Image (cartoon, rainbow, N blue to C red; front, top):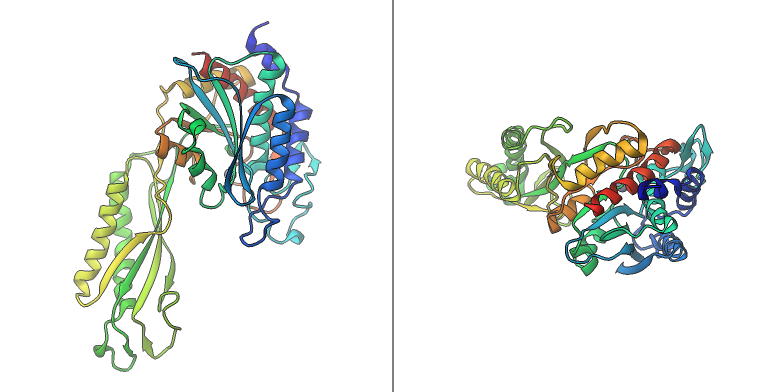
Length: 409
Ligand SMILES: [Zn+2]
């Protein structure tokens, strides 16, 4: 029997489903200030599971109560590769439990689905990656190179887990990664990027009855807002066309005058400072310098119209650029083959509308990433989140077959 057949034989559908349910039953919403609301418990479960299966395991303390669990089999020796199957252990809030038709952390199994917060995003993807790795060990197949499974923290926040991983030896030696996020098991070679730009206008405080005595930063932000559609058009001209993703968008999401922490709003006072946030979503082809240049242009345009005001911007998140990986990359080729062998079907391709931990890996390490995992991409963060059992089992097989081919090559 081929190594692939031996590995696939060790993937048991019921076990993948039960592991998913065990992970969903451990709540892992991160709530700042609450020491019990972190990824710690689910991370401890994952660590014990890996150790029980015979993986090498490293626990990386990213923040108090927030450990990355990184497990691997094999070694990266000269001429071989290291592949990461990446998942995250945090989930977003369940919201009001009464809005759910099933308990958010009950992991109910019904109608061929597992229900619960994190069922799709992404405890099923993590479970599939864990079982895929374990199948190598159980089949007695040592991969050429190194197969790493990462259960990282804080993907839903600042992606601290991924930022930590890329600075560690095991992260720095990675050659490629499969991001196990819910994408209906499509091979997603592109992800949108996101930049949150805070634009601040400084004017001069004055009485609302005598506006000529002041400089109105709110009117100045009005000029910025009026220019936003043109900024969007310029970014679209710079971006590469995508078959799978919407073109760049520039969306004002907050506006405050006076700016937070600078006085209280009063109807008869022109504030000294006002701020707004632009939520900028990107597709491939727009780099950091281009965005910075466009935002500078936006601010200097507003300053020209309001010469006595000062308009500046700053990024309030680390830049998350769009990612795109070429179909000719070895990891993509291995996955195309892996999907065929694991499911008997031709791969479907897609794109990720948001960014993931893969964005950090791609930007920091320059490695190719493919996002592919069980679950409908629209279902995360909603009530009654669920995942199809058949997709979880397919994902485990896809990961195992793809890993074998990528590391073998
Ligand atoms: Zn996710």
